[in-house]
Image (cartoon, rainbow, N blue to C red; front, side, top):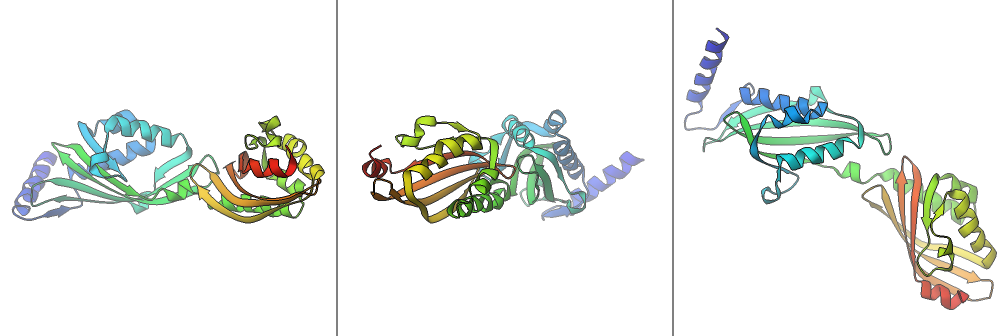
Length: 286
């Protein structure tokens, strides 16, 4: 009886779709795509693959000519999933529809709200997503996905933390500066800078003794000017600024500088300095 009912629905759908675009929210293809979403959430990539044709092309946030193979997408999904402690779609936000176009193509559209907790900062992110998949003989042969990943790539908290560090340094609050560093921070001064002799400095105490203490002993003043912070991918912040300093020998210099900061879970884990070392050498002799 169930098969007869399904056959009747399929026949009715076929008749209704003759010579016009067809729309439904209940179909075998939609049921299949629901399984795709479930397998994705469970990271069951073997089952996930069964819903796609071997030659399927998948274009997530790229144009069709840059589409990836099913194998490539699964490997990418595995890498992405490893960055999260939670990873799923909010059930209450799921919406599905199927259409048959005038050309006879069958597509399933999906709208959902993806939710994941990032290991790097412990924050939970929610990202609206839309996927559309073409079916042929019950398998997905083509799929397009659209979502905005910028909340994951650009953490605004990182800029706040680096800004706090610069303000603390300018106020002479060195203990506060050190508190913002990870206990295993890797600090590198620019090549040809005199203080690069200790690269890499590992840990806040090494930075304090190898860099900050030497700056305090060798300069009458050392100021940071024109600081601009740029949020970068990969939990990094780029700072562009200038050093305005007066050495104990009486010479002044104003040098162009860039600092690249790397952060993890609210702490600074790495620092790389870039500076006009010729200006420093001309003023200090080293």
